[in-house]
Figure (cartoon, rainbow, N blue to C red):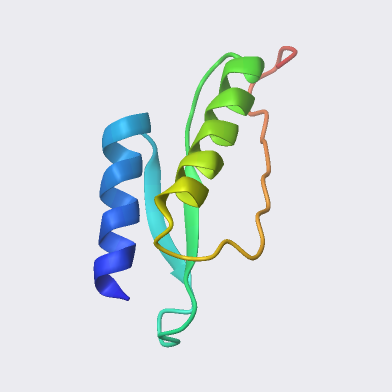
Amino acid sequence: KRRVVRAIKDRLKNDFNVSVAEVGDQDVWQSLHIGISAVGSNRPYMDGLISKVVDAIDKMNLAEMVNCKTETLNMGSGDF
């Protein structure tokens, strides 16, 4: 499992400049729960980036993606 986690994290960090961490199921060897974050000022760009990251994980064929949840937070005062 560690090898799979490391491969996913390294590739996403290198290819997309996103932050990646294992955020759940650390004690379950058959399951992997990762969180990915990115910061930007252009909503369409960020939506596209996250979509590309999800596609990249799926195409790695290192693990089966069973569920995917995305969330966007607007921390500024203007329209995002």
